[in-house]
Image 1 (cartoon, rainbow over the protein chains, first blue to last red):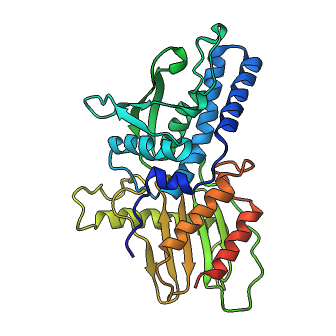
Image 2: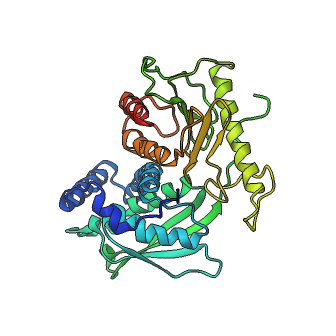
Image 3: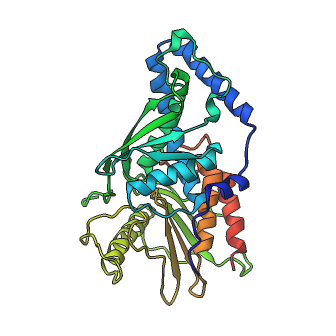
Length: 186
Length: 169
């Protein structure tokens, strides 16, 4: 029988179980607030958010692959498109766009016009170095690592710091092929 | 990186007396060769101990994937034989059949491999394997008590899987 075609982000988003957006935003806000109280250093909080995102990403990839039926992406361009159009739509309900490709096709920017994580949020003066949505960069890094891509994800523009959109730069460091895990003498 | 770790067989369900259950065994591996799950419902003959059995199965699939990709007459670029390919890249084999059993295989791009051994007249099980992958996501991946990369010890997953396998024609 013919292989099932990949489903669009909208179709999956409609079928998947959803939570209330405000609950999601407020819960995330509470997590960041608590991390700030516990860790105090803004840099530490950024790192911790990224690590939490990484742990989410390594599990999220399986759910994404199972629900969206995408097959292996041929190159990094396709990967970035799939993340922006299907991934973000499926999990956050927003569509992102991809731009700023570099010459080799290993580095691009994902632009988010609206972001459910930051509704109602304002950064106070004491936390100006905070990347509030750093969990998203961890999620992308974790998920891509499970499909053999080592990447580096950083924030270029952040609405909470005064820019007009959210811009994430995703840079492919290398593709890590599988190795046969057993040693010959075992 | 976690290499192959020993795993004992998860407690098997009682052998069904009815002929409704066609599945013989199921294996699940992750990309590092760790056997996440092994369940058997109907396996009269066991020749190797569990560890060797898992390693043999994993090695077999690894080689088969490499071989089928190399022999692909339609693909323009082929890796060298033995050079590992990224999971999901190139052509992927999905089953082989002998006179006594049929082995069906599915690999996700994240490296999760699901192997189902059934009786030889079973039809195409690709959809069933996808369904089992979905079950894995719902019961195991989303389970906060499960550490990714370790053998699955989730009773609910085992029960649901057994139930599903009983329903496969």
